Image (cartoon, rainbow, N blue to C red):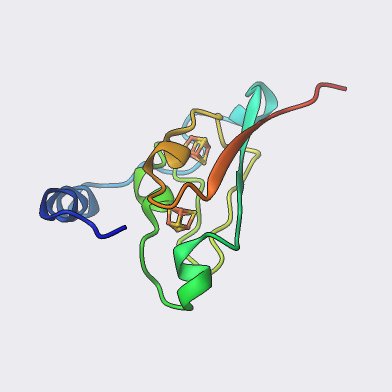
Length: 101
Ligand code: SF4
Ligand code: SF4
């Protein structure tokens, strides 16, 4: 899905704003009830082999997504908010229930 100019502008602005620091909110993974799972067969940088998209990295409020191929999510600090899922242009991310033990 092509990015609109508005989205590009927004990414530019967000890219210039200081990103949050991983772990600022503590080990959120201990209480979150959902976790994101990336379908690597749909993920744009994995499919293209190029450093593109990374909306999940850009929009994650906890800075727990890596900007590499494939993107990786540190579930110890992920709070399960689902923003990455909302912002993924190809619906490669799903939120799965965390089973309590
Ligand atoms: S937003 Fe979706 S397509 Fe883009 S890098 Fe993240 S998982 Fe891949
Ligand atoms: S659900 Fe996604 S956006 Fe939310 S904290 Fe976890 S990785 Fe970041």
